[in-house]
Length: 610
Image 1 (cartoon, rainbow, N blue to C red):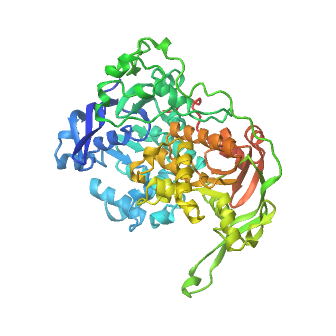
Image 2: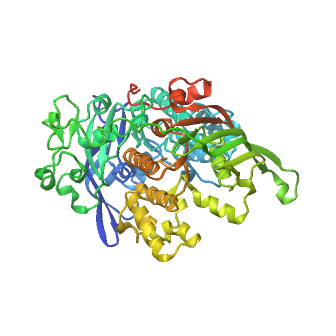
């Protein structure tokens, strides 16, 4: 192998909070060679982003680097002065952040933001910077560079903003690209375009890439090697094909087993429990509390990172030298999927539904507004205990449809019948009763949960609005919280004290506490770790079986839809372009757009590209 571009050696990082030192990364090591793509995967809080921020010397003020070195071409970045860092960051090592919405300055046009990088690092200004910026925008396959140059971030789609971030990172032809979740929450087609772009650019510019993601399918498309982090520790590292086809750490096996696949419908199971955050966790195996193969030694002795006979493959497990012991990890014996429920009389019947938005300056008295039809002539039926999935790109009308079904958006035409009654004819009392029986779980639990309310208050609020007594409310809240896999200790916690998966469970508990007949799930697993996602899907199926409710599931993740849906509607530009039984849609799609969606889903079994 050629000399390393980036060599991270025994890096340990802690954060100081509340007067305590909380370890986040322990003795992390990674070597990156020219032209190589290394993927880093693992749950939220595993230390992936911390490692990247340390490499950029962008750690927050409360971070403490306790040990280690980060060498770029032999120079230690952890001990470099500000002047040296300024010549490397953005010029030789560039980073692409997870959320371009927050990474881009909303008050500057995107062209000026890219040109600023050129001026800062290369001294290129004026017309030369404008021409180079246009070249970069064309390089990342953005049409009409002058228009994009003059646009503000909010005037671009999520995929376009991500491409602008990539263009900015490539402005100075860096040796190393650090990519932190660059495809999280993107539509499947946009994600596929971004991954294809990264592959193409990697061949053209020959940069080395560290690609951080919790989407193992996306990593499989790009990575030459894959590193798996858990609770701040590197537990496995090796060639991508070996990691994906023959993982040697129980956590890696559990992660891969939890990934939904288009090939078949099966019952997914997440890895039981949650990752430890205790400072003492590095004195023993960090995965011991969740591992199906734990013995006494695992709870008392920290396993070393062992080199496996296959070469270039390491695993931090006491049984690494005895791989025959580890053949089935939690989640891998998931079994077959639940049998689709039998259809009956429709609970919800929608016919000819159309929804419009008015846009323009009319509300200021400056002219006429124009009508934009967000949902166009949509019809479907949903029976009890059935799951209807609505899929499509952002802007296809999925969320507008969901809000309209709860009368949160006014329809233009069409009919929405709930148990044969038109919801648009409901008076205030009827509407309150309907919304008790029809609940919604929003896409982002962090923004949909009041940060000042405890879990007990959040889950109990719908019951309070219905006039349920305090004693009965307390009993039902406790029972519902336990039913979604939380415990009584969570009742007094605030949202900020919960993990992403725990917040989603609270959102589900709030929806289920009124014992609804219909639950609308708007992207309920977006941006969740793959194991947490599997746990939430398992929970949803259990709740459906227990309560007999029906789900309308909105998602752009077709692999998730494959595991739970009975019927599927494919929406594009506000209209349904294909619909039918899920098995038929996934095995014999008819519409070209449906075929494009299915073809764009990242697959663990596809060979990765370098």
